[in-house]
Image 1 (cartoon, rainbow, N blue to C red):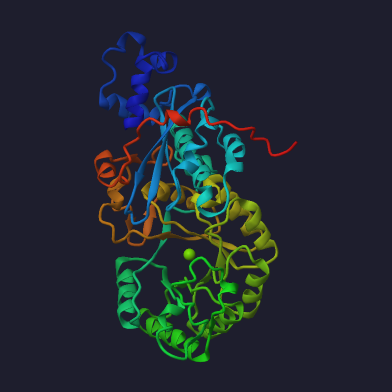
Image 2 (tube, rainbow, N blue to C red):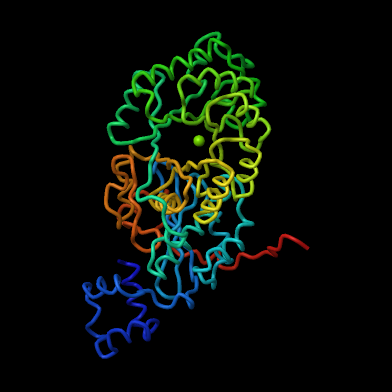
Length: 458
Ligand SMILES: [Mg+2]
């Protein structure tokens, strides 16, 4: 309700004079703004002031850490007291959003696509897209509040009434321990599971991995797969397959089980491992090699009869469409905070669907970005399941108010019916988890005059 109350306050200052005043009679203005009255009007009239005159006046941030990731939340303010929340992708610098501030000031936030096209040149793969996508989320929040409709409705309506969540689970090299953890997820109500299946599982056993003596799974984080010299032996592959067999023994074969984080190794090892895993009927193999190498991805896809997925670091629809058109992968896996925000991700899903590919969604942020994902997932037909990383963070869902709690109930998220993203921030909780040395939506005037000649052609 805060955004509405602010709006009402704005009306007292004259922004709303005509629209709402004519409904109730100007003479009653002094007494009509009791909370019950506000509630009543919210259901019956467009409570926002004048969307066509809405203008962006500010962009500020509150940088949350430990959620479990580091996630800057941004707030875009307007001349009518309305504001919208977005989130820069987990792990990304808030600078990616702040450099956009000058490009946003004075714009009408309801022109979401127009602004997106203006700023998308400042996005790139993975975290570098975080600013553009965070702003796009905040624009939908604002547009929804301005017209008093939930974001999914602005995207074209919904295909489902609740969003399937797939949950990450803490690893253990003991398949019994890990299998029991996954079984607990099923008991919690989750209907889709994912496991990390890296070769670090077996590299401590002699004869499992061939590698240069100073190269291990821990030293190759910044070396792309093909350039590590790492290859799995038959023994290593058999041990990894046995691990999955033991896990499947505990959770059964019925629940979809995806796998990720195999470690950086050559394409041939990926293929040999993939073939060994076929009998475990996995839901997808994720990012076996980097998304920038479509020919190598296709080599794996063509050789292994398990769906292949990629996409969490891809920015904009074009690379996704190219991957789908070439049948390089089976399942696209965008992270909305990197792929371009709600509308671009819906476009990605729709294009993939036309080419015969389903869409799972990567996510590792706070409930702000989570709700952006929920609205997009609701409005995109070929959606499978949305990732969730924060089941062990007790205060995660307390960051926001508005939707019913728990936000994830028996493996599904409800779709908010409130305007915009449907959430408010809980300042007390946010302030307890700010990045050291940062404040709560403090002024950012130093970014008001960031300028360059932004045209991409001459
Ligand atoms: Mg992944």
